[in-house]
Length: 449
Image 1 (cartoon, rainbow, N blue to C red):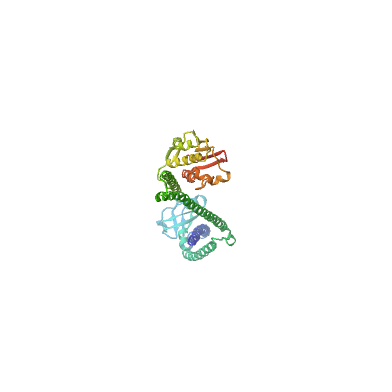
Image 2: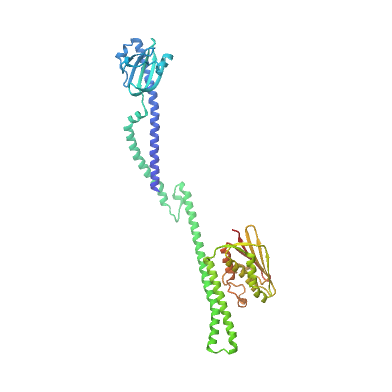
């Protein structure tokens, strides 16, 4: 940054110098041209007065200023005298601009390239009393000539300018960058910087606050995830240990021969049920892990929700019949772009819970509603309901509202966690409303893509 500032200051100073020199040369050129014109007019007037007093022979004895040329032209344009060339060899000057002006109005001036001297000249002519025209020509200063004449002082000034520009650029770049380097990024203080840096210091301070806030949030989230992981591990251990202990105990009794022949089928049925419980638990854990890691290889595709809900209700019909729970499917034909298996698990777990936690002879109503920006799935039951203080935790893993009847109800306690993760996989929002003793309503809003 310091090098960039140094270069910018240096090249800016040099550019200003070059522009200044060009302007000065232009101004000097204009000034010297005016001065040269005035001097030429004055000299011509002096010579004209002398010629009129002393005659044309005076011109042969006079020496004009260095670089000047004196000519005497007759009214018909013939050159009578010229201080540089032989008058007889010169062409007729009647058509020369300054001569024509002098013959008609008494005085005339022009500037042009002279083939005789090989230079650009400034010309001024005066008509004398006898009708002849006296012309004085002087080599005209050009910008190039002026620049050549000023070359030596220009080089000296340029050298001085380069040295001063380097010193100034080094000093200014150091002065500008020093406060930047002195800023403490952890604890910036705007009292130690100049005014232009205050917004930068304030921005650094604001970013530090944002970073600190984000770090604290990440730390809190890490602590929460760590607590959930420990709780999940403990719950998994407990949920696995219970059926495994039961299976191991009954199997040991059967192996040791301590069970009577007629009790073996009952014991075997218990072992079978506990094994099935283990299978369901392991499958739920695997589903949840896949949803956590988004490890789903299937491609998203349009899924019709109404046929899917009908399949789920048909598969749960036996469980509903045991509790005399009636099931109904209502609403619109809705389509969601997603994974059919995950959508089926969402519907299954919501309806399965609605049956398990329902009262005898209750009802479960599944409603589909198409909105402008979403497809809405609602599962409403007439079950035991959920206390308001428990609503925020029902989606936690292994969390059960009624722990005393968890064994009777069955399940793994992971159903609503699977619902939440499956909904999140489809960018859907899940909402629950419940009144204890009257029932619960779960709503899933799938945004239209």
